[in-house]
Length: 174
Length: 404
Image (cartoon, rainbow over all chains, first blue to last red; front, side, top):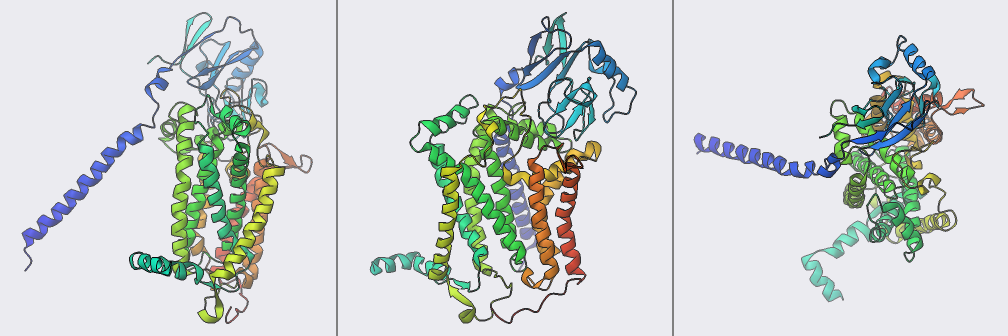
């Protein structure tokens, strides 16, 4: 004889046990998954300072920030003009040069190709007077905007602030 | 001795197992030399695990030390140079063997019913091998190691919405670094053991459905059509191992760096990418497919990744694309032509993957990117064409023999 109340009770118990098991396993997995995220000491390396007083016009430096390369270019008038000229043209990832710099002469870029993360070569190596990524042939202009090749986006401009006239701080303090 | 075996067999029937699954295991009598590559792959897996285990006893997964440790293994550790060259070249030979093994399955229709699951397990093992090969290449922490890791992990950013966060999670930082090296080392140690487990399942599936054969027809009479595995095929497999060892050891002892990149003897430098990054040769055709999708604007990156992964994943559905009533391409002239076009095309894609992305052929007349796109189309075209010529009965198979 089948007692319906008994059957329902058993179904409920099986379902409840299963649900607790799944939720419990997921909860137990979380610390393991989270252990892969950046550690506290890695997160603490949030900012980098650079002194630009020795950076003459036309020169460029590469500095590490969070283990990633940052290009700081002291652009010449010609390079600035080239960037502005392209403002009105059709760009794959439209952006105005003035929105990508704080001081016109200093271009600050996170120098990782937005295609697959290679470091582009210095300014002047690519078409459009800018940077060429050697890995898969992406060309960025004198404002770090993508112009040609497989990369989908412009080179990102990291958060930065000028501490004084010639000292720039890359990154936000946490 | 026999008393002892009786005692064991009553508790764990080892003798029965050895008899039915190894020594007296019925094997098609017409297997040709292409059937050696399964046992050769197992041999290489064992060589890789053995050499890897002993290399691991000297290696340290530390971004500051890893590069120097590899040189320490080469110069200071007794026979360290031999272990490392056996391991590095072993990867190359493992992949050569596995590619032949896969192509043999494709040519003789070994993926067809009832061997689909056997085939799928093989594709999973291939995926795991590629992962393991990639992870292992990062460990020497040279320029190619570092930038190979950077480029491949950056593929994750193509994942919509969560890609950027996901790659930081994989790195354990904001770029490939110490944390990345450490976890890659652990995974490089773990995955071969996972491969080993899958190999056991692969052989379980094989022994459940038995080997295919060059004629691709079923065994009618076990007495007439098969031979016991031992001694007929143990001897044949041993002969294959001998040939492999001659070629493998020639490279290990006389051209140990033939398959390695000079740039990987420069310590990893996160601030500078080498002018020309190439992955290990066994990834080159897939790398060429990745790079050939560059005409879809901002969608190119994701599409390239999908095409590259799809190039392997399509093997999963191959058993259902091939609708021919005949398994072996020996009796399928059209499929055979398609197959050789596929093989030639894969080699061409490898050559394109090896060259810089802006390279040209014929004195600049033909940009390689054009050739790469064509090659990608031909690669996927093989599977489409195979479906068309078989599903619509365009191919007229030749008459099959009655028995092996």
